[in-house]
Image 1 (cartoon, rainbow, N blue to C red):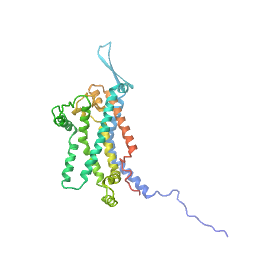
Image 2: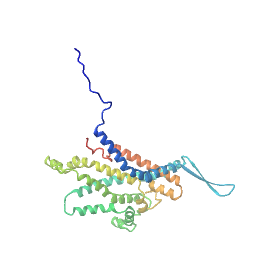
Image 3: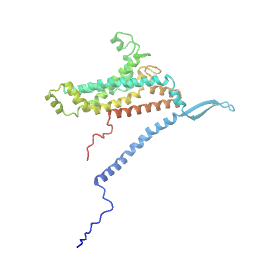
Image 4: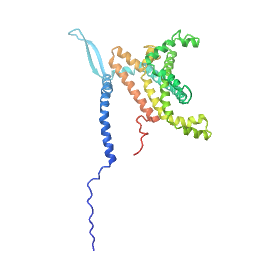
Length: 317
């Protein structure tokens, strides 16, 4: 006997899981909410960058029209502006100043900022007052900070009185470069301290108690507990400071002055080209600086793994 079995009809396509539909709806809602912000960013950021990139290839030349006798400006496109940028010491010196400021200033700021964070994190009377006092330099505008340090580094200022010497801080030389490093460290080390403090406050106290019970010294607890757990906040702080220092303009311009080879940065030289109405060359310097900052940021994120969008903090569903 042959048994006949009737199979239930199978649907052509399985229904989409509810989780997939929920994600799709959330994605559409997020896109709708972000679209005004993305539009504004496109108008105020993307368009100027593209316009400056186009302008960097624009070469203008002036000649006399033999028929009218008037000056005529002709515009063409080429790589002449970039050739002028990379010729001689006109680029190497500002590039080295920009890079050296970033390396030295950020390294010192990390050491001082971590020390500030450790001090602000400790429980003691007057901790709120200490936190407010430490954050005051960061709250001062950079131009005002430059004027303050310009008075301190005056030939008859406080710095020379303490050193017992007559150092011309605003003249060409290593002392001008050092004055910018000191002023920048004083102003922005509290920024790193603030971000590191935020990282310290999420570390459970039970970890330190367990380390103390195991006989770990404070120094070992710092290297084994504090530094690894505060590393994400520290990496983001260092990245932000690198981006800030690489585009430094106002502090050396106010503190030391323009056209000083010891402190001239890529931003300053681009500004000088613009004030001399050489807009194509100024745009070329700005484009080179933009690409340099982008390359440094990409290398830093790849090397240290900065989690800028929080992909490592989400929980699996």
